[in-house]
Length: 143
Image 1 (cartoon, helix red, strand yellow):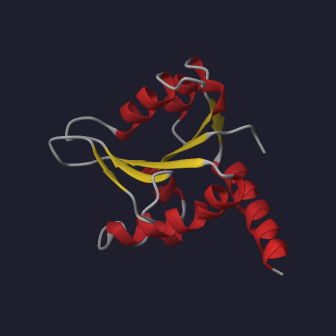
Image 2 (spheres, one colour):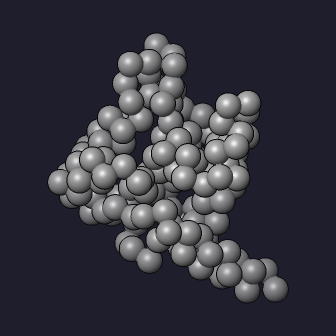
């Protein structure tokens, strides 16, 4: 697994890539976000990685929600007229230690932009391997 202090997820981009999450987008976006969050939760818990799921928003301002009531696990919604990609680019670009930031997205343009800022990029399949590793360690730890 990469050295990572902050995991940034391109929320709706990843949800669109997984049919069981995507099926809820038209009827229950919150449910699709919850499924993604629950899936990456083990990385946050086992590897103590700050985890931010970034989504396109509709409000006047950037908004932050904490679904698990922890400051290290957040949903960030872009303001109306600003894409989630732009927010991810800004977060990665302004990080004090950009090489410890990992961005997961299937968006090639966003991948190139965050790599240019010094952050790392991880594919959905690499993220899946990391999740599985954390889940296995969690099971061993609990038994």
